[in-house]
Length: 70
Image 1: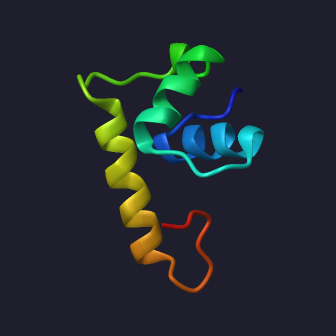
Image 2 (image 1 turned 135 degrees about the horizontal axis):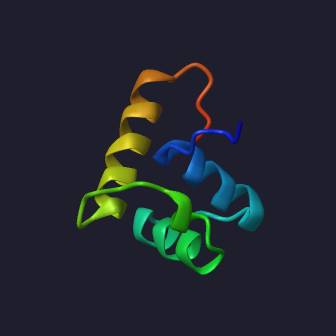
């Protein structure tokens, strides 16, 4: 069974490949370019805003060992 792709996992996969800071909009646009977002179910019109919110919450809640940095 394939891994369930979340906004955070999508962000992680894109950033692992590029190894440079990205904005949430760049993360979404690049995920579309490499066709990661095509199998991703998002009903919203601004998925990059959801990525921004999810990244913020992750940084806020995991101050000791964050996956992402601001």
